[in-house]
Amino acid sequence: MRKIWLDVIFASIFIFVLAFGISNAAALKVFDLFDPIGEAFDDMEFTDIVFSQLREAPVPDERIVLVNVANAGRASIGTMLNIVNQFDPMVVGMDLQFLVPKDSLEDAILEEAFANTKNLILPSKVLFDFEGNKERDSLEQVIPRFLQHATDTAFVNLYSAGSQVQQDLKMCRKFITHEVVQGKDQFAFGVKLAQHYDTEKAQKFLDRGNHIEVINYRGNVFDYGASEFGTLFYALDVVDVYSENFLPEVIKDKIVIFCYLGKYLGDRESLEDKYFTPVNSKYIGRAYPDMYGGVIHANIVSMILNEDYVNEMGEIPSYILAVLICLINVALFSIIYIKLPRWYDGVTKLIQLVEIFLLVSLIIYGFHSYSYKLELIPSLAVIALAGDSLEVYYGVIKNAFTRERKKKVTEVNKL
View 1 (spheres, helix red, strand yellow):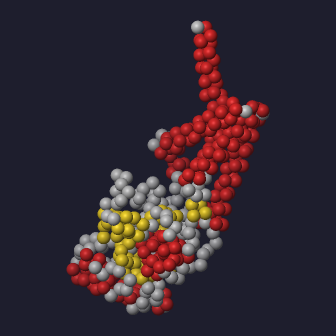
View 2 (tube, rainbow, N blue to C red):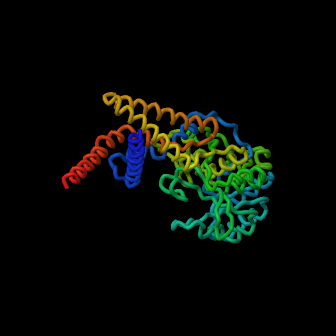
View 3 (cartoon, helix red, strand yellow):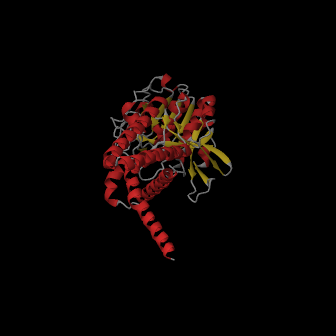
């Protein structure tokens, strides 16, 4: 039994080394032949199936209204803001950058509108340090003449896996809740809007203590079917605001986000400030990004106000579970290898398929029913590798080691 368990341990170590080597080879694009297949799946997670296929339509969140600025200039944005202010919103957030002075008259009109806005949140951008320092270097903010009228500022950076800023793929599943910049706490745009609307719920969210949170998406604005649940947030276009084509209660005591939603509401062609999200109607091999940044911020606010968070399995428990599953599988497969060698391939493949099906089902069920994100990719990887890797261990590595040991014993005996 001692010998068998030693084999189980060494074979498990071999499987993890192999899995690590394969993951590094994939990261370095060693297997370029498979890139077209990989690219179709590398932006997909099993939980995306829940967002885009299994969830029932949530109730629209009427506490949040988005205003599309389209290609309007600063004077037009100021005029739109003055119109919205007449209907007494609770808080107004500007997901728009005003980094340099422009036409003095236009800037004056926008500044006056800012001065007349109650609870105005202006955007900032954390300039991330890619040298690995924990504290960030600086904060990019709007010009001082606008900044002086802000009730508060908040950073609008969005997050993608592997980096702190959106890059090529622009897949947005998570967001950074807060950062420390030059010794001061800075909060995400969605968090700050929630704080000014409902302080207690925002604090309850921050008390979770997570630097990065999964966004529990509710849906989108009208988008001609680009995503599931495309009418979950009320949105006004430029012409709607100018003509006051809305009821007063749409704005009164609400969170209003001024942002870019395309040249017109429903514009699917514009890619400016647009991202892939899990609610994309095509969750594999996505062709078009489905959600503008302003709507992502609205989803974050809605998640906080609804206290509808996503909890995640930690990295350490994930790897502990993978080690346990690997040891159990290797022990079971070793018995089959010794006792039923002729049946080994068929039986082990069947067990692997059943295990993978059960784990994937568990991931989907946990997320759909409890908003709990199980991190079982390491477990799935060792299950997929266990059968064939164990054959390599027994047929090549162990045999080579045994022959080498026998050779050394023979040489010692001759001496």
